[in-house]
Amino acid sequence: MACKAVGITSNDIVFCQSLTFSASVNPVIYQNATPVFIDSEEETWNMDPKALEKAFEKYPNPKAVIVVHLYGNPAKIEEIKTICDKHNVPLIEDAAESLGATVNGKQTGTFGKFGIYSFNGNKIITTSGGGMLVSSDKEKIEKVRFWSTQSREPERHYEHKEIGYNYRMSNICAGIGRGQLKVLDKRLEKKREIYNKYKEEFKCIKDITMQPIPVNTEPNHWLSAIIINKGSKVKPLDIILALEKENIESRPIWKPMHMQPVFKNYDFIKIKKEGSVSEEIFENGVCLPSDTKMTKEEQEKVIEIIKGVFNRK
Image (cartoon, rainbow, N blue to C red; front, side, top):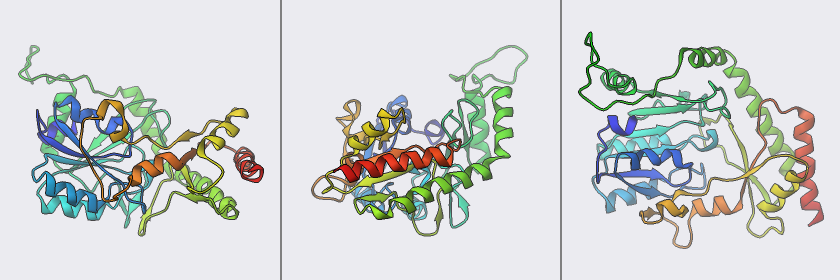
């Protein structure tokens, strides 16, 4: 809906963060537009402002920029917004994973023209599915409401002048979400505890680096993720398999969109001469168990298993 609301149509160029889930990019394809993928930078794992500037040099007139706050870690959103404003291009924030995360006290998802949040079952609060679109542009939001409720005109009979969508959230699901908002602060506190526990316990392992926290930000730590240093004898798969043996799920970092078969024909803009930052994060990263229902004992078991992998190597 955000892509449609900013006027993305056939053959438009849209700059998209490469290190993300495909849901950030699929809507560009729905609008028959062309994504151009932007590499990440090491300080946030999110869109690199320098690579974004380079993209503007190659493609001066994109229709929009879609940035992601990966795993609840804020991007350099103020810098990215400044670049977008300079080029008079709307910014769409994929804050699906970052509800509760802030930059200089301001909630992620509220910097751009539009922000989106996910309430999928694995998010920090959930309605079981669906999400939310936010904007300070009241006229655009009203238009999105119209589209998302089948574009029904205000007539006594059923009148339709535009194609509509059934993107409504049911009252029951919305009620669940409103109820869960009351415990958002507690969930945020628990997520921070989980991240800080991992960070403290892994200080003794020189080959582990936690996802960095950018300056002047407060991530929500939706997922606690680590990087295994390139020269380490331990590889991400070693950790994933060791946890799997104990019926504990962990996952690789998102595979960048420019590496996905479905998007192989689209351009990718990066600063790094050899390889890319997003590829290195994918190849060396692991998302650790981070659920707020995880007990201290369960987290200690995860830590013990990971330490054991390194000790055996």
